[in-house]
Amino acid sequence: MLDIKFIRENVEAVKKAIEVKHENLDLDALLSLDKNVVELKNEVQALSTEKNQTSKQIPKASNEERPALIAKGKEIGNSIKELEPELKDKEEQLYLLLLQVPSIPDKNTPIGKDEDDNVEVKKMGTLPGFSFKPLDHVEILEKNNWAEFEQIARVCGSRSYSLRNEMVLLEMALHRFAMAKLLDRGFTLISAPALARDHALVGTGHFPKGKDQVYYLPEDDLYLSGTAEVQLNSLHAGEILNESDLPITYAGYSPCFRREAGSYGRDVRGLIRVHQFQKTEQYVICTNDLRASNEWHEKLLYTSEEIVTELGLPYRVIECCTGDMGTGKVKMFDIECWVPSENKYRETHSCSSLHDWQARRTNIRYRDKDGKVQFCHTLNNTAVATPRIMVPFLECHQNEDGSVTVPDVLKPYLDGREILVGKKK
Image (tube, rainbow, N blue to C red; front, side):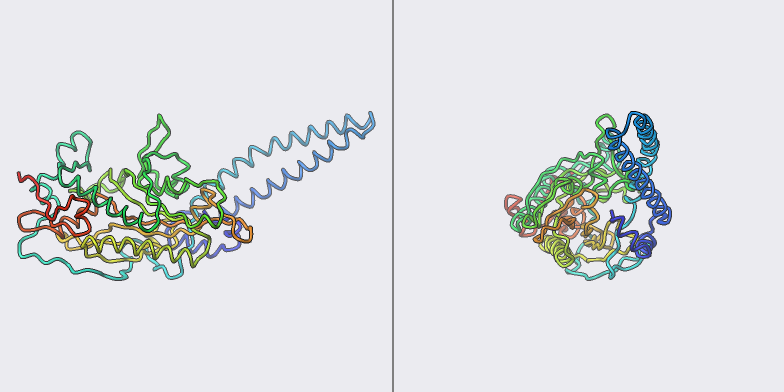
C-alpha cells in the first residue's frame, strides 16, 4: 500500500507503475474518490465544530434563546448522522482501491509484460553430463518406489503426491540443512501454522488480487496460506518497534497450500506443480533505509545461491520484469535450477523487496534514533521449498542404476548416507 499523500504528489509515477505492472486500476477514479472523502470529512468536521460551539452557548443562553439553540444542535447532529454512513462507505471504497495500488518498481527493473521478458543475470555451476540415458524425476521415484501418485490422487484429488522411505528423509534433510544455515546466521527459526485470517493475507498483498489461489475454510473463516511470509508479516502488526530491535530476521517453516487456479493442464506430472508443499522462508523486517534494504536483498539472494551451490545444483539468477514481479514488489530476483529431462531451468527460489508496501498494510513501524516513527521495510526469499527443489536434485544427482548421490552437506542429515537407493519395483 502506498501513502495517499505520496500518490497525490506523484500521480504520473504511480500511473507509470500501474502501466508497467499491467494492473487493472483507474487511478483518476481513485483520486476522485479521495477528493470526495476529503470533502466529506471536512464537512463533517465543520458541522462537528459548529455543533460543539452551539452546545457551549446553551448553558449561557437566556430561556428565550435556549430552545432555538437546542433545536439547532439537533439539526446539526442529524446532518452529521446523515453524512457519516456515506463517509464510511466512501472510505471503505477508497481503502479497497488503495490496496490495489502497486509499489513503484526500482529504476533498474526491466520493463516487460510477463516471464518471457525477465532478464538473465548470471549462470552458475556445470550442467551434468551422463554416460547413460538419464531418467526424469518421476521415473527415478517410481523405479525406487519413492513416491506414489495414482492411488493418492484417488484419495486426495489431482496434483497430490505421497513420498516414501528415503524421499521422506531427503525432504526433511533439505529443510534441516537450510534451517541450520539460517540459524547460524542469526535468523530466528519459527514453525508457522498454515492457517491465517483474511487480514494477514491482505497484509502481505496476497489479497484481494490472489484470492482465487487460496483455499478457504468458511465455517472457521480461515484460509490456508501458501507461504509462512503471511504469518511472519503479521507477527508485529500494529507495533511500534525500536530501531535497536531491527533488523528482525525469521526463518519460517510451514506447510503451504495453493489451489493452482488457472494452471489446468500445466506441469501435471510429478512434483512440479502440487497443491500442498513444505517451505522454509527467509523473512526480514528492517529500517526504512534504501541502503539497508538493498543490502538485505543481496544477503537473502546470496544465501539461497549458496544453498543451491552446496546442493550441487547448476542454476541461473534472473531479474523479474515489471509484469512478472507482483503488485507490491519493488525488486525481485528468481533462482532457477537446471532440470536435465526438460533441458531447461525451473524456478526454485523467489527473492523480493517490498520497501514499506507491506508494512503500511499491517502497520509495522519503528521509532528511529531521532524519535520519528517510520514504517519498516520488509523482504522475503525462499530458503528451500519441497518437493519442487527435489526435481532438479534427483535428476542432477542420479546414477545409471537409478540411485541418487548425496552431496556432502546433506550427509549429516541423512545419517551419513552417501547414496540413496530405494526398493526397486
